[in-house]
Image (cartoon, rainbow, N blue to C red; front, side):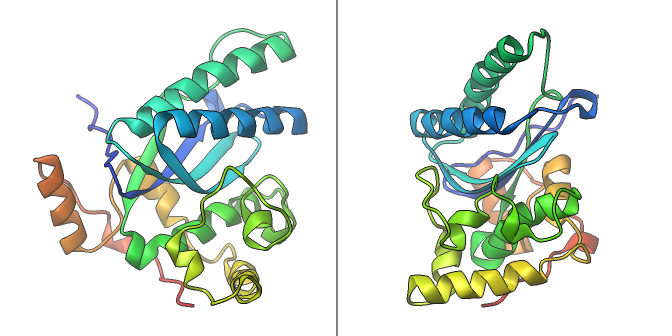
Length: 230
C-alpha cells in the first residue's frame, strides 16, 4: 500500500513529531540536547522554518513550526537528521540509524488551536513521565514562555501574544494554563501527526485541499481538542 503523502504546507502551523528507532533514546545527556538545539537553530534558518515551541524527550522530539515553503519542513528534518545522527554516533561510539523513519506532522488551524497545540508540546515531558510539572523541564520552550530564559531559537506565536498586553501578563497566564494542561487532556495533536491528518474544522480542511490540489481527509472528530481560551 502506498503511504499517504505527508502534509507539509507553506504558511501553516504544524505539529511535528520525530521518534527514535524502535523506541530507543535519541538523547543520552544534556550535551546531546544542547547540540541538537544548536543544530536545529541553524537548520531552521537555512530551511526557512519558524519554530514556535519544542520539547526534547528521551526518545522523541516535539516541535511546533511554520514552514515558508511546502518542502521546508522536509529539508529541515533531513538536514537536522544527518547532522545530529553523525554527531551522536561519533560521540557515543555507535553506528547506524537513530530515527524511526521519516518524521510525522499535522497542519493545525492556528487561529483555533495554535495555543492548545503549544500547550501539548510543552506538556509532553509530563505525559512522558519525565517530570510532574511542565514548568520545571528545562529542555522545552516552557522556560522561554514563562520568562525564565530567552531562547533565540523561538519566535513567539500570535496565540501566545494574545494571552496579555505585557510580558508579565502573558507569562502569568501561560503558567496558569500550563499547570492545567495535565494528563487528562488527550494528545490530539501528537496522534494527528502520527496519522498525518490536519486538525481543524471542515472549512480549514477544505482550504488545505484547495491549496494542495487534492482531497485531504479530516482529522477524527473523536479526538477534537479542547481549545484553551485565554
